[in-house]
Length: 108
Image (tube, rainbow, N blue to C red):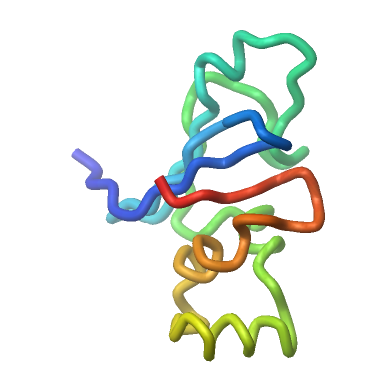
């Protein structure tokens, strides 16, 4: 059985679309059943098309890694919240609650 550690609710605008989990084998992203049953739904990313089955990866999915700040802003995040730059899930959780785009990440 795969253990789940830190979790994040993934929102598109203000609608909960899925759950991102850190596991002992990497990461898992699953769309919420209620979200999939809705109308006018869109995927979190083109690289994570809508489906009922969870996505699994041994690294943080590139889409989620891509919304983590870079450069000087990443340095501010690392220093302010004392997050190791190699802790990608930690960086995602502390810095992506309110992104420029339509996706937000909230610790579950």
